[in-house]
Length: 516
Ligand code: FAD
Image 1: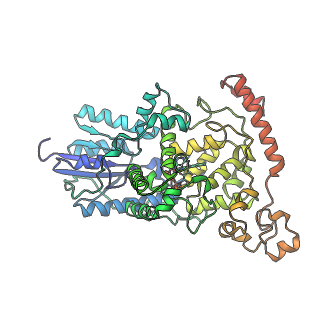
Image 2: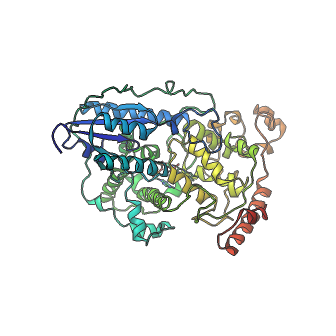
């Protein structure tokens, strides 16, 4: 490349300096480098109908997390002699204009498997190819390239974790050190007629806190991600003995898992760097746990879902998704709203949904409980509806992982033991008999004696009076009876499974109607 030429690093996820091959390549042999982030209205316009079907808009906590991540990235770039350029608009239009006006010769961005980015990136690559611009788009959001795994499996994604592990093996890059530090990057060139803004505030983006969606306690950004990572890894015994199913989903002072998911989602933390750090810990301990329950095993669950999602058309839908059982889910907006707003009358379920709204993060088993309750456990509502609520409110909301886990928990795919239902009353009690988690997230129940905290409707009226919480007035009665609702769910799942088997998965809307 001739001296004086410019490169552009387009940040979307991958909001980090460490282990960022796209950034590293953009900064190599370029006189100028334009680090760009485009505020995309597709995700970032406050939605007046927050929960309207199909809304792609992110909730306020995730947007704040993103803005903090951008500020942190800007700060890190400044230390390297550069800065982040923030523009707003439809990304392909903004980008093409930048490429033209800044006379960019080299365009670098991290490869992204989400369908939205696949379509967008194709558009950009087509333009670049016609304009003679070199494109570098490395796989660095995941440990593996999902396409490689699918190819090894004869063109189809593996549908079990075990077969995924067998195909994947050890990642090819894992034995050499990753580039964790950059000492400098080329300066930003002339930005021509562009009005470059600072990283905007929530207010500037039009987001207002409405009391419904509170702000998460987790701070976004690479610096915080690396701090959290170091903190988690400092307890080598904890890392070595980590067994996911043994964690306490109600732990809130110190969560039972790393809470690195939002940092991985935005790429503030490189999953490859995380993986290498874990392997380093394993080398220095006598014994350690293994996949699927170990921490490395958790990263491999992420890979598994990315691979299946990438290789499955209509992965995020029931219709037209060949790996998804066709189930005649009920439609009931009132029940859906009760679940979403934490008013089911089951304190364990409601507390988890409040944690989702306030923190944008809950423990994996807590997610299990509420997803099972909404779908095959109690309410028999469509997993896509629950997915939408998670997609909006989770700060770690991730297209492949969220859809994959909803398919799993609703017994629509991967996991088929629909008779195994989480109890909304006894599951949480095993971990937290005093109900401290419920008391924190549902303060209306804070004075309810522990004998009744998981089933407050069974408390005598005198106890309810003393606890200043009358069931049916201050806190709802259960929206369904778990015993009868779960029995009915099992029956319907049994019928749906039989129909799917009989029709070999090719079930029409009319077939489903016959089960309603
Ligand atoms: P840790 O246990 O510390 O694990 C480390 C990392 O491994 C996580 O940060 C995550 O990237 C990955 N990981 C862990 N568990 C899983 C899993 N089951 N599947 C895939 N990757 C995993 N996770 C998301 O990141 N985004 C989502 O949108 C999401 N939606 C979910 C929806 C449902 C219904 C369920 C049941 C789970 C969902 N998960 C999702 C998976 C899991 O609950 C979270 O990744 C995990 O709780 C994050 O906490 P952590 O970082 O402390 O996890």
